[in-house]
Image (cartoon, rainbow, N blue to C red; front, side, top):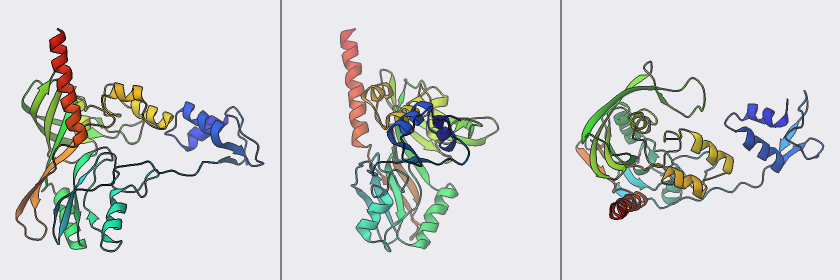
Length: 307
């Protein structure tokens, strides 16, 4: 088997082009001879990929506090900051920053998850007991969640409900979800806040909490989220390009309309884990999405003036 194909079998998310670049940049045989993508791999042979020293991507590390008491902490997570460590992020994560701020043993416990690109409200518990209560509220759907999003196209109805079953695809990227009749039933209510030429600012109320639910539901009704690399007009092609190129390019950002998907966790209403009384917390639309919406409005005005 060719070396580039062999690497693909070991790291399935890589494209053929990316595998070839990896071989060219850092592929060596056991005796130290530089490898080529066309080299044949034989039984018993060892191939080394000698990577340069790891450099963690930068990310916004400020964690504005929305609410804090002896039971819980609510922060306004900035876009681009992962919640937990991954292969690419270690120190630039919410969990690590909380440990820096509060100490390892006293660090608040994260009660749910947000995607790295999604901004907004993130709840943490100060004790194990309160962590269990908050997580149970999410799992039992006793947490009223509201998101804000900028989507492609002008949504016709001012309000409505998207009820579509979802499941993982039978082939392709393992991180994807898709609408499928045999999947689990998922429901999202929505209400339009504003429209400009070709775009809508919409408020989303997920009744269920499936991974990528809002992104999949909006794409399924023809209104994908601006900047979405998996469920936009080009499906997962932008995501694959990011992997191949090692990041976003100006041309790709222009195609996407924004460097990240325009989704923001805006509001949570739930029973306080200590008092049991109803509590509503809000994080205003993140600055980058405010600028995006303003820019879209200016474009619409300029287009009307030109016409």
